[in-house]
Image 1 (cartoon, helix red, strand yellow):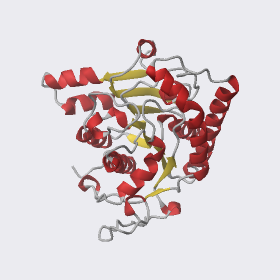
Image 2: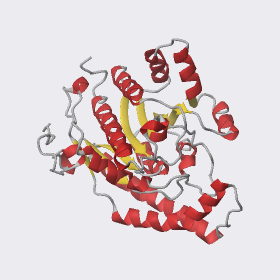
Image 3: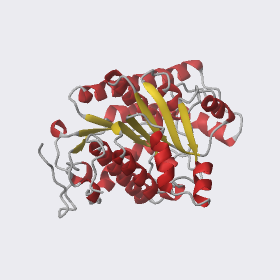
Image 4: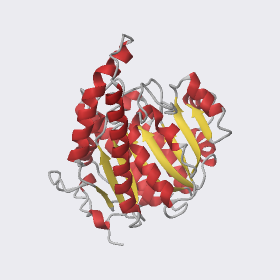
Length: 349
């Protein structure tokens, strides 16, 4: 396998993601950018996530001492789809005022049935296009990831993977459960991702961590799932740490709950909001960057095979560079974890 380089001494050279010179046809991992934010809550801007993280990745020294034995830069990102961006902006124009009114608790304008149907049908069309694109690369034996955009963009990749794998689990890192059947009238809301994912029989388990803002309805879905959904609530994880239980012990419990094949679905608001202040729906508390990185390394050491991932809800804000810097670094950690996991339990540790 050809190894591709990082142009560390050429900071102005913008070749590709992480300044890698890897062409798409030779990449081990292909990243599909999804500039989509039709149903996003509270703060908009996540459609700009792929673009801002790409730019931030030029500043990253793409090297991990834990995985010197693997090709760390055989990663390529597809061009950002202009058509997807235009469609997202058009639909967002229809939804923004309605969502904003609901969040303010005032009488929201009623969306005409035709507008709601247009939003739901076009969102589904977008997801099917993403699924088709993902399948094209999966059929070439490449690993595939999605870079959002709002979290609903992950459904297309999950459906593609369900056509390639008989069974797998999801490690869902999120402040929210995303288990609503529909949210604010939208069938394919960012708050409904896991509801739709669980319709896929190939997904045998969803393990949620970072969860700290969810409804009674969603809690009942978890309780009634007969173990198909396992939630490691943020309050419980933090209480364990305050009682002296090591994070390593908690990581082992999380990993033991997962099947051998794992998809990682990562909403950046699963992290402490100081790391993602501009994300759509920030929630106090959450995971630290190093905690997540350690969990990912433990997954590889335990022999879990990561079959794909998404990273969503990263948005630029007042401090334009910070969210993108954190997002691009987490993207790299997810990417090398996915590549490294193809060789069971093989790390330099």
